[in-house]
Image (cartoon, one colour):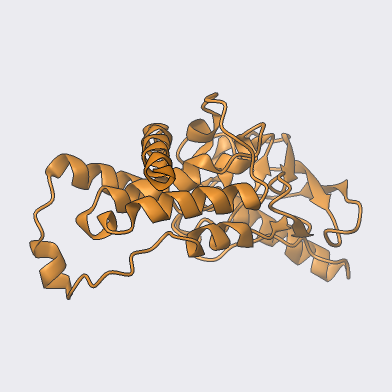
Length: 249
């Protein structure tokens, strides 16, 4: 396959960026999208040019590092697929592919296609954990949890924190990410102790970081590589209103 790539190049957050066109030649359809970028970078290095900076780690769809907007879609054209698990057979020979970083003020560009997602870390630090004693693994497993609650908690815990929901939302809202973390813990007995404090702190930190509000369009759920449901946002809103009323009382 021979492809034309329009890649966003930007030195740092304070420098204006621009699209630069590259040719990707002799690309195997069985390559992943990141492997294709590796091949392009090898050519750039041989030519003495600066390689394209992009984020990656596990390349197994687990870590959420491979945050690219491909032809206007976070993680590319396939549903429930991370960039690293997207294969070049999803494109056609001769295609032009536009590659950009996440576009959101709370995710400043570090270089080229790499963005700083430390804002997500700070949201987690504000309350996305349990500080109660849960005992050892056998003790935790002995706690009776209804099957429906366990399934919902497991689905919410599948969030990899990639930020595709933010990149897809016109308001750059992080509510799907925050709701998934809050739901995961609130549905389990270990998370009940700090439930009210957690939702208040995490929502406050989300707002402080500059993420927008949710307008229920659903683009976040459509872009999420793990299929996190909007039901989690509804659950978070209920928990938030309950905690807010109790704190005012």
